[in-house]
Length: 244
Image 1 (cartoon, rainbow, N blue to C red):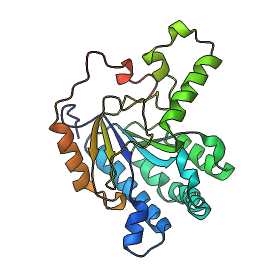
Image 2 (cartoon, rainbow, N blue to C red):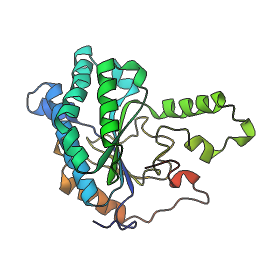
Image 3 (cartoon, rainbow, N blue to C red):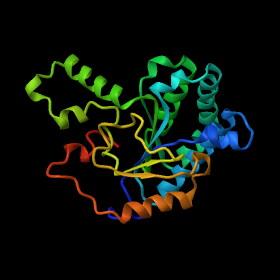
């Protein structure tokens, strides 16, 4: 599908909220909701690609999620391995490029190896870039960008928005045009704080496992109906800094 920039955002960011509540409503363990959430993500990637979205970034695990019960965290990390095994070939064949953003130091070697495999296998794909934010936080991203600038010896007078954007975890992508949060909560939750400065915000009560093409189309219709205003100055990060 040809992308109409007035109707279809180039970059969509999603907080995939409501997996646990979806499972609870069905008297199932929370992990079952997370598993269904992965299936919903795969469907969403395909739907976004079909509609001409070039970048999709999803919040899979925040830096604050480590406070959850150990059993749930262990299940989520194990789900990463299952998801890569089950869906990597399918996504690769559909032209999806996978990128992992976040602090990888806290996860085990098996999970890091699965991420490396997903990125390596799909590195040549160009149809849509799926960025999975895992152990990620917006404040962490700004801090790590500042630390990189210091390590690289950037002089204070040379630090501006464009330079700092080039050091963030999503430096390879344009800033999100549309931010979606499912699950009924109306907050940002420390996701892409730097990047969503001018994004259109869309909140829905739909729990993430139920987010389907109709829900996506409703969000895109809301986006298409808005008059976007960026103020007097927009960050230079509106264009990708690196390769897509």
